[in-house]
Length: 430
Image (cartoon, rainbow, N blue to C red; front, side):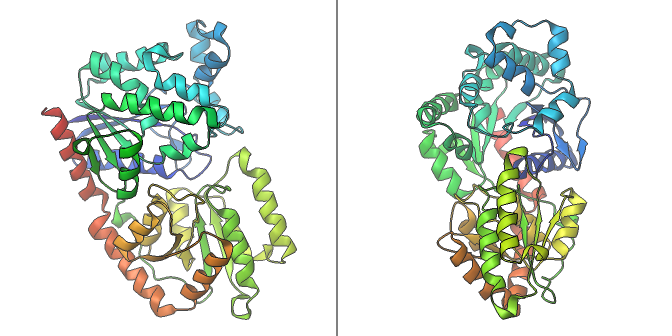
């Protein structure tokens, strides 16, 4: 079977769990003997510091579509100019600039993208459809998220193939928009959802949320969690000789880094935690600089900054090295997440989780036994739970073993890929 996975690129400036998920999934499909290709839109797909599939063009180049959205007179720019703005070095530079991954200010662009052939990116849509129709000729197209659904109707009509769509964290993007746009975008998404043959949600929590938001009938929605390859992670029991809390995600306010910093400062006030360290990795964007500087200022005031280490290498090898030296992982995302790939990476390496009782976190921890949850998502509650967990070596080892076992039995990417293939078969046979 030939599968095209259409995903938004992100330029590689921070840890992007959704992007890592998509890349690992396509590799798993290939290992299963299928012809699978990742087709990036907006920005290049960058993993481990390198461009993936450099021979594959980037459709809907972020610079081009931004200029066309903002300046109508550029919508008929000559081909040489479009080609220039789509150069991958320009796109990668654009990814590093402030606002490139921020929903606020891109509301009109999001609406236009969802309008598909009726939006300002009609030329880009036709280029993508022609590429699928005459160059790749896939059996199925799989969108990595529902914000790409403006493409679905024309692909189905002109390429004549079914469309599958993953559901993960679309609400994070939409709920960050100006209030005037939120209802409009949700309604437009629900309309475009009718063009999709099957949806795949990464958790029960998110399936229930999006089923309501997009009016998806039960028979169209499937629940398949994210997976990783267990063999790519070395299992080690948590570091209890020199305890360290780990944070693995984009270092920003939304991901709860400020909550963790405040909890860390509280813990350092206890005599038994004087030597506790905080290890941080996952990268940042220019938008995050002021927020990070504010956290560093708090740490300096508390005389704790010397015990915080930032790791710039969040490639696959860098993450594995990072996980070897921590005791627990906590990413206290302020509003929760649809899943959170970093949880699987931690459990595969034997590191227990301490997560807020939000989003899919309790579902994943209950299913795996690889961590604990706390409530509410405040620095006080997090510090209390971290103190309890780090002080209990038997509990740490118990969760470490359970988490690794769950990765092998429930979150093995190879097994989950087989479930996804059954979804593809069901829509191609209809």
